[in-house]
Image (cartoon, rainbow, N blue to C red; front, side, top):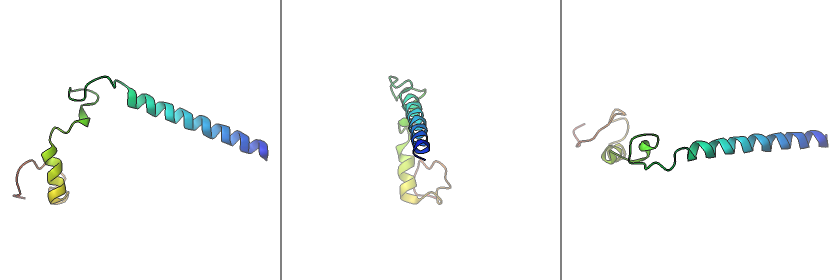
Length: 74
């Protein structure tokens, strides 16, 4: 029974290490690109922060889950 626990523990840590390495690689892929240029990381920049603020002000349902860039005339 002790041998089975050792094998399952080793396989758990091997799988965990593979997932960790894959996530580090996926996160660091093309990390040197500036986020304000179009491409891989351009979604990190908030080009329309007013829309996000309107989601918080008026709620998701009243904005229809769509972009709401202007004023309060819902």
